[in-house]
Image (cartoon, rainbow, N blue to C red; front, top):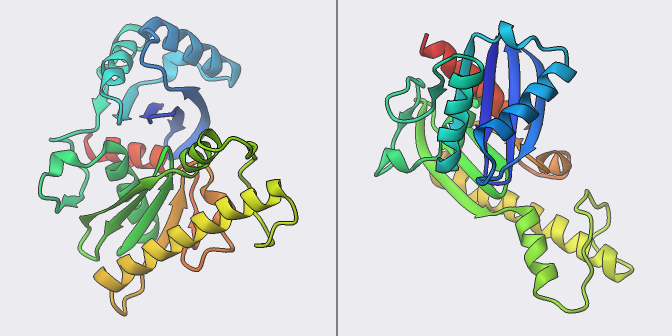
Length: 256
């Protein structure tokens, strides 16, 4: 079984694969102050609770946008699984051609998402990942990663609105069906939802016009709150909650 770890700025997503099947997954809070043993104690408890025998894990693959935690989870792999992990980075086979000025700048999670999207949807493809930041990753028909866009995440945007205003309350971020709110809370919810929807569709539209004039392009969402925009977005045609985990599995298989 493959123990796959995606370390993000806010959450760490862990999944276990038996062959191609994701048999369990869970989230941990990202905390650079936690030790290897603390993370291991939580992870092992959750694995046991979902019926996973740790002795059956024979591979570990890690992607991270938090450099400090690469060491933490690599050490956990060695200490608790007795396995050398595959850490996504330069030199790892992905099948993706990085066309950035400095390929080392691209986040590991963005490469992993692109690999998974190509496998399921083909090329060209755009991946919109709703995380701490919302990222737009662009892959052309030659499986070349062209780059993308990084925009403040929806929760981050909402928290700034709340922290910088004296009288506006904190609201739950959710799908809205009416633009015009009939009270303060509904007005804030509408502004966040439809404002962000306009940003997403606006950026995707500009990417399509700039890079893919007249071509059919699959545009998919993943991460966090991405699912709430499906159905209202002009361009988002699918939501893949486990895209990154599947990408980690695929990259591991490419490096056997």
